Image (cartoon, rainbow, N blue to C red; front, side, top):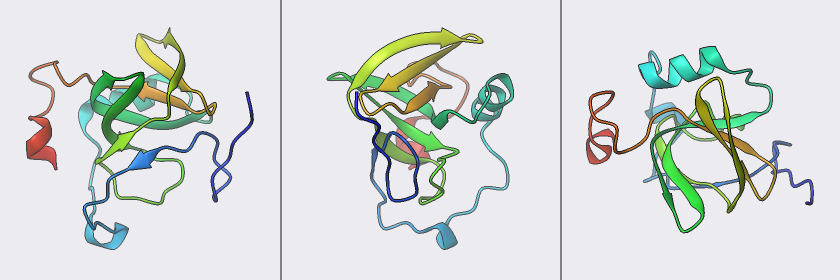
Length: 123
């Protein structure tokens, strides 16, 4: 597997839909609880990002990206990972390794009710 880095030197690029957002127009005063719990439970030096409202479709993960190591986009935008190479669990969380080598954490599944509101309400 090739060691692929983006323009910021972070391994494992992914696609994100910005809806015209920029960092100066979007501010979070605190992270969603499910994301904060996952961050507290896992060492972050190797993780590209944390996904909320995650779905797996066509061999890729889709969800709202938080704690993006590239610090390029506002928190909570929809993201699509590269194709999944492997899956494993760490501290009770599903870790997804993309074909590019980046690690993503599923902090919350779309079908889990009660943690956060519907996907369409968070956009």
